[in-house]
Image 1 (tube, rainbow, N blue to C red):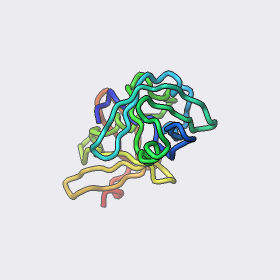
Image 2: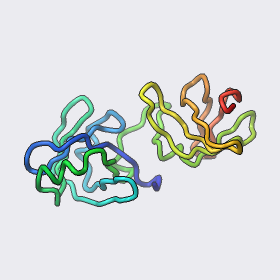
Image 3: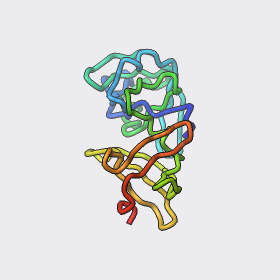
Length: 168
């Protein structure tokens, strides 16, 4: 996915009878959904763009999203599990030490200043975010936690790994 477009939410279910979608915010923030003019729903490699008709907040971290072109509950239900993708300028705000998953993908992972891998993807394991890193020895999973990961520099596209044993 282009870093100019980011996943801002995930479709949980259909909502009501008019084709609205209940969406969980990927960031936990919901105010930015009210500024979305357009989104895409992505399932695997298939992605479809829609204009946003209206948004209703369901604090703390969900919204009901009505998209032009989805008019019935059964059609909306078919999008359960889809990613909601939006332009970067409409994504949720980042706090200190927070990153968009899309910005971490492609970063070089450095150990003692030497590249040991490249971030392929980032996902939420429930306990912590995980970096899927391609190394010479294959794909490794690294918890994106302070005791394993040091500085992140998005300008140089590098992530410092603090402990080498995690790659074993």
